[in-house]
Structures are given as structure tokens and as C-alpha cells.
Image (cartoon, rainbow, N blue to C red; front, side, top):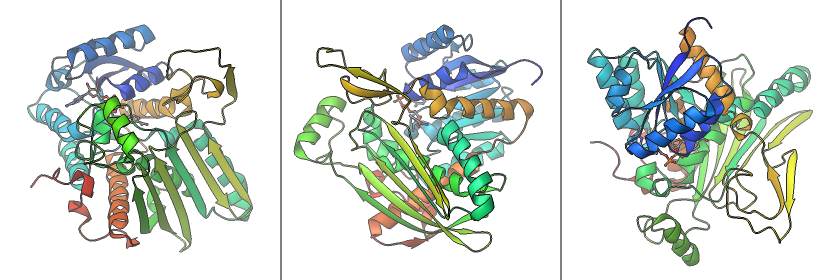
Length: 413
Ligand SMILES: NC(=O)c1ccc[n+]([C@@H]2O[C@H](COP(=O)([O-])OP(=O)(O)OC[C@H]3O[C@@H](n4cnc5c(N)ncnc54)[C@H](O)[C@@H]3O)[C@@H](O)[C@H]2O)c1
């Protein structure tokens, strides 16, 4: 790239924003120059973190509109909570329509929105002001996924035929903030929160490198959801203690387990399958991302907890609970896997590098909000299938107005 580095404004200053900041230290030609959060202290501490990581002279802004209007801001990374997506994008687009700012792109975290109607709404708003969009699905950029996929297709598939089955899972013990647990705020339970990753991973692995995503057409979807752990009386109590009284899984539970099978049709008429599983009721060392890709004479497997680095702490080491070994860590003693650079291993670094390059050069990113909309369509079909207890042809009728039972009441009239 030539010219000045891309000036980035962060919206949100939580867990996810911090991961992005760490990832930006490995991205050239970009500076974090702004942060906005409704909590001014959070914005200030995120700006201080950006300075300490040397990823840019970030300053806190008083509003999203003020940040958009500043010509120093070239692109936004939207990392606020799901329930704020529509309002955040409306404020951005309203500012642009009032003739302010010089934005060249906007990247949005997963899921693009809580349901199809919201996702289509934000995508249409961005189109209305001709704003280039990027959909942040980090796992497609995870080095192990990218490298494994490239080798499987170049060696195994080229000689013995395309892969026919992909599996992916994201599992941990439950989210860190109350809003994730509340169906209406988040848009659902674990299916909405994390299945977006695994559905995209299976689709990506099954798509031949260089071919468009549309070369694989989803035709039938079977979803399953269940509340396995957090509705048990002792865990209802524990969850309330951890998250506060607004999270009551005796009265308003959301699913803590989900699985989906997607039947895809290839351009040459073959059927291939994607299986995805996700869970907030998994107990292991911490967050586990995994995937498999299988074909006639080959297979690939990935599991982030099979890390190269392992530490052992005897029972004499009584340290505080932390997340310094692995995200969503569950223990501090015994044999523990460590992921030395999580933002790189989970794909954030390569994802941010890609988005920065695309926005700087005025090119379309490999994942846009149209892909974000498509992912929400798949998730909502999985919900509909799970709730009706049957396999559905994709897309099912009524998909654009569908809302999961646990999020009912969130659709605008
Ligand atoms: N790619 C991934 O693996 C991954 C991981 C975690 C979270 N996420 C996504 O990132 C987003 C943020 O999640 P998180 O874990 O950082 O949540 P969080 O609760 O830790 O942080 C949310 C941040 O948004 C701010 N916020 C509150 N109200 C807001 C509003 N109205 N507008 C804008 N910002 C507001 C909060 O102050 C906080 O800084 C979510 O959409 C989540 O799904 C993605």
C-alpha cells in the first residue's frame, strides 16, 4: 500500500475489541485512531490499551457521529453488542447522509445482526450510502484452517475427488457478559452466538479455493437445540450469581447446545454435508475450536486445545482464576494447554490484515455484509428447523420475519 495508514475507529471496547487491538499489532498500514463506547471509562481504557500496544494514537470520541465525521477516521470496526447493531449502523449512515466524514469502509463482528430482518436492514443501509463492508468471521482466516484447506484441495481433492463432509465446532463453558445469555438482547442462545463461526467454517472448507461461495448451494437444513446444563437448578443459581438477577434460566432459558446439518449441492450436482456443533456447556481447559474435512482418500483435523505448548502446575500452585493460558479458561492447575498467540491462531490477525488491505485499496473484501446476511439466514433456518423438529428445505417460507422463540419481541413492526 502507498499513502497514509488507514485510520480506524473502534465501536465497542469489550472483550472482542481487545482481541482486535492485539491483532492489529501484526497489521501494517493501519492505526487505531478512535474509540467509542457508551461508557467513557471503557473507551478511555481501550484507548490506553491501544497506546500501550503501539497500534495507534487512539482518542475516545463523545459519539459515533463525532467519530464518523472526523476525516482522520477512514474505517470503522463495529464491535458492540448484538442488540446495538441496528442503532450503531443507523447513526453511522445518518452521519454520512448529512454529508459528514470520509469513511471508506466498515467491518462488523459476527453475527451481523440478531435476525434476518435486522441483517438485511443494516446491509441495505450500508448499500444506500455506498459504504464498502467487511464481515468479520475470524475463523476463516485461522492459519490452520487456511493452510489445511489449501493442502487438502491441492493434493487430496485434486487427485481423488472433492471432499464430501466437513465438521466444525466451537465450544466453551459460557459467555462472559450477561447480555449474551439474554435471548432478546443477543438474538438467541448459543446457536446465534457461536454457530455462525462453525457454519462458515464447514462451508469454507467444502468450497474449492478460488471458487465463489455460491458454488456451494445450501438445500436442506436440520437443526437441534437443547438446554443441557444451565437450566439444572444448581446451575440456574450459579449463573444468577455470576451474571446478576437479569439472567434467570429457570424462567427465561436459551439453548446452551446446538447442532446443525446442512446439505449442500455442488455446481456439478453432488451432495456434500456440513455438520456444525456449538456449546456453552462444554467443560475442558477452555475454548475449543475444532474442524474436520473428509474426502475419498484423505482427511484433515484441527483442534485448538491440541496446542504445541503445555504447562503443568502441581496442586501447590494455587493461583487466581484467569484467562492467561487460553480463552474461557476453566482451570489453573494440572496439565494445561496454552495458545501462545490467540489473536493469530483464531484468525484475527489475518482477518484484520485482509480488511485493511481491501479498504485501503478500494477493493471488495472476501467476506461482506451480504455474506453476513446469508449466515444469519442459515442460522435462522436452523432455529426454525429445531423448533419445528423437522428438516427444512432452504430457504423456508417466512424466513425474513422469523425470530427464535427465545428472542421473540425483538422484530420491529
Ligand atoms: N469473533 C469472535 O470470536 C467474537 C468473540 C467475542 C465477541 N464477538 C462479537 O463481538 C461483539 C462484542 O462482543 P464482546 O465480547 O466484546 O462483548 P462485551 O460485552 O465484552 O463488550 C461490548 C462492548 O460494547 C460496548 N457497548 C455497550 N452498549 C453499546 C452500544 N449501544 N453501542 C456500541 N457499543 C456498546 C460496551 O461498553 C462494551 O465495550 C458481539 O457482537 C460478539 O458477538 C466476536
